[in-house]
Image (cartoon, one colour):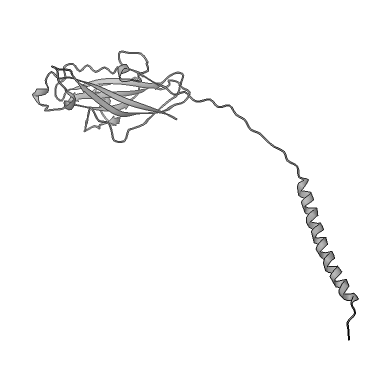
Length: 213
């Protein structure tokens, strides 16, 4: 016996309506998203590079830039050195008054040029050490007494004049020329140096590197 056709039609129509209803719901959701608001924000700034420049001063000069060997002016009264006898000299370093940032300073290299013929080269016989002191401290043997801060050598050891510490010792330096640093050098001919070095000479140049903060 055949079943009536009408109920089948009704079930099929119900499924179609369900699918369409789902499509309408999705369409409604999409229309809500497209109606959202947008509101942009911008940020702007002006940038200016900082200024960092070092200056140095010795016992016979005012503050000056010394960016080359020709400008260096550390003075050591060492025209009559004898083995084991020290001579002392100081160098002050600061940032220029125009410097807007501070940084650090470190002794990073040292070179020596021997005296011209017939004087001869004293380089191999020279050694030194250096400490950091307050800017007004007298640079003499007393500066090396106690427990000063060594930037080259130590209380019991000197370095050859062509050497620096393997790891440079950085020292903070203030901006605007404030709070100068003083480096005190102790230079001597090595004890028991051979007499063949008598009368010879050398010009030693120490190089300091400044790095801005």
